Image (cartoon, rainbow, N blue to C red; front, side, top):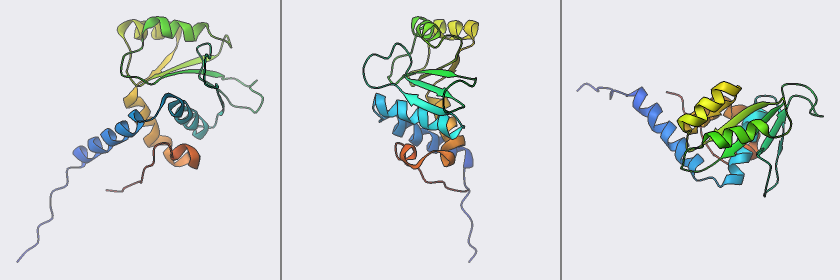
Length: 159
């Protein structure tokens, strides 16, 4: 009696894993989402400051390379954690927010309207949607602080 190895569909497995990560990210509240994005930036080597709850003037996370925030690049980040797409006016608000001259990153789990994409392209704003967040998590998760990993608890599986 010969044993046959079941055919493993690697592509389907990876897509299922991405969907599970998306579901975990979706369950975060808006403040935990800001902490997750800050944790990803920290894993990339940035110092971060998350705005306290309440009005933030369009900047949820401020990231920089040095402890004092003088060294460029300085990145101002707007995080929208919702189902609806973010629009052009929101992108322009981020561009106009202090500090002026900083690089802009707009994160929206609901994606972006065509007007938002156009505004971002014309002004050098980097857009990250839910799929992009999942890619960043996959790439930087192991370098994230444990308290940030706890926001989206994962176990690495090798196939």
